[in-house]
Image 1 (tube, helix red, strand yellow):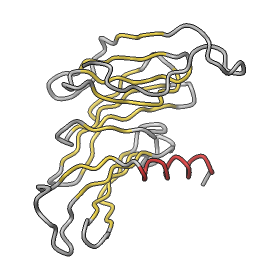
Image 2 (cartoon, one colour; image 1 turned 135 degrees about the horizontal axis):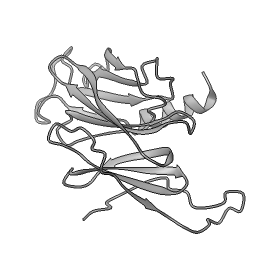
Image 3 (cartoon, rainbow, N blue to C red; image 1 turned 60 degrees about the horizontal axis):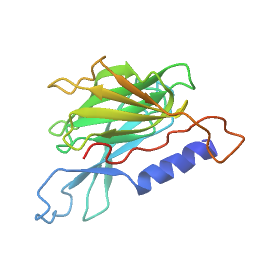
Image 4 (cartoon, rainbow, N blue to C red; image 1 turned 90 degrees about the vertical axis):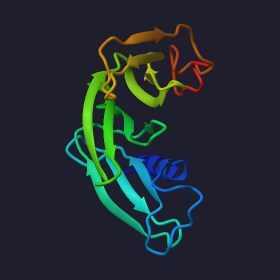
Length: 188
């Protein structure tokens, strides 16, 4: 495995997204799964780049119920407040950059791809939801832009995107132009 992939997996593991499967007041019995861990990996689209694990908070046992193929390098993920909708960036080395909407069924533990939309910006590196979860936003590293997607009631990303492009140069002269690498609380 490439050092870059290992580094990214380690960072994602350390800052993994957890989805509550039970009340936080309940203390899980031995063998009772308490959480799901969502992991994004640098993988080709024919490999399971999005992986869902069950994690037992009492025993630290881990079970791998499913993964999802079909997205290039879905290394950054986020979920809505219910944990039912997952959003992933997708990048195929500048050939195809996408925002992807997934559905997670907590009962079966299965993931499915709802749809994908082009970010119209290269190398999406971060994806998030607006505070009221009406919009999905990506930070696109190359070209320094943010893409804003609306979504329908089922969580599918719509084509009526808005692109916010930044101008100027950063402090590093080797990197011409702006670089977008994160989004936080864009809408308040």
